[in-house]
Image (cartoon, rainbow, N blue to C red; front, side, top):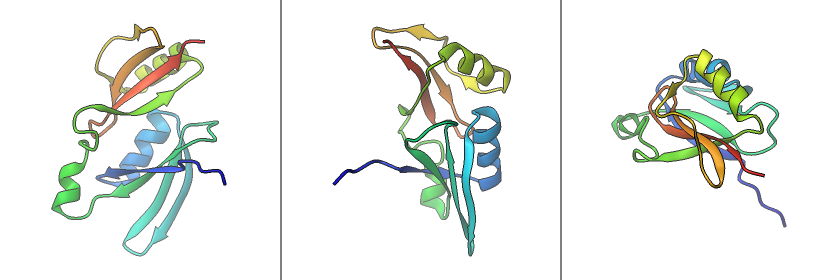
Length: 129
C-alpha cells in the first residue's frame, strides 16, 4: 500500500485574498473552490505539481485567528522547490512577494526565504544536482 501526503491545511483570514496571493503572486493553480455551507473547500497547488497541495482553511474563532501567520512558530515551515530558481525568484519579486533575505547558495540548494501574505515563512529552493 502506497501513501502520499496530499494536503497541508493553511489557516487564512479570507479565502479570496488567499486565492489571489497564491495564484497571482506565487503562480499556483486553483484546484478546487467548493462552497460547504458557511465555509469553502479551497485547494491550491504549485503549477505543474503532482505533489502536495494547500487546503486554505478560513480561521474561525479566536484561537484559529491568532494562529494566522504563525503556523510555523516563526520558522520556515513550507518549502517550495523549483527547477528554475532565478526565473521563479524574479517573477515572484515582480509580483511583490516579500523576501526576507537575499538569495544564497548553500551546499544543498540555492535558497531564499519569503513570507506569504500572512507572514508565514517559506523557502524557495532549487536543490543542487
